Image 1 (cartoon, rainbow, N blue to C red):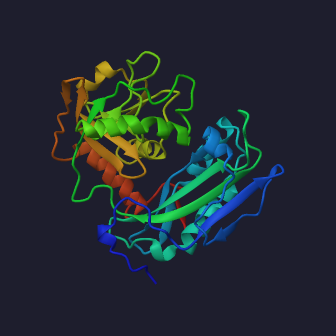
Image 2 (tube, rainbow, N blue to C red):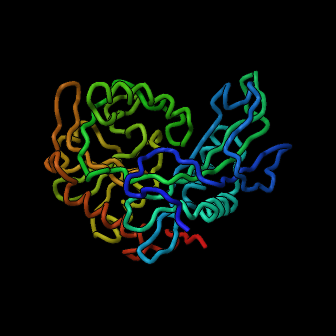
Length: 340
């Protein structure tokens, strides 16, 4: 039986669902893990996560397909990315198969909260891990907790797609050779002041340039860039301090294999941006958000695709990938995991 929610009017916020997954790491090993209805966490005041921000997270979604199946999209890549995050933050790796099993359990246990097909809403799944034992010297914690909860969320674009206006930020998102390539909570803490400042000045997002030379495009606070050239090529920035977006990688595959487009994954100079025909931001929340305008300290770069709708190729990419996610288009092998 479906939860009694107004699916068409959900925002992108937290709604408590009945069950979540918890596993604890102690004495060098993970316990068996369990589902619980308790959404509260009790920690020592000296927990590693509170003192030294030792935490990483992931984000993925469950969908109801056109045929009424409940599925998740490429959760194996979330598991692999969380492995890399854990290693970089000196946290124990939560095994991939157990991660996938936890996703299955959390979605199945909260299946009444998976929005119906056609509503535009989805079930957002948030896996995360943190240092739970007391740490006062600067070192990794000895104990950890891995948790996963789910919450129904509305469509990212309420009332249709509106291209974004973004600015070139004076702040750096990540340090050279730092943690920009992993999904660490501390990266997002660093971006909060910049995004609040951008919003106060009338911009939707920040474009971060490379922290070493400030001449190459990196990403925004929570999404990778995707550009379309005037002759229809897809170009995505390459850098060691960009988070490897699962959505971006999927869109590039779709561009090549489904739409027959040429894809270049390479360093992108900011000086090139004015010559692109379309620009989008790739991420779990919106799949791809069109960018209409970039403000570089008062100088405007306006994309030919305009401020009213997605560019033609961006729209094709969006329609194809969401079609795969929703079961309208056949998916590549291994991309869709059905929840029984």
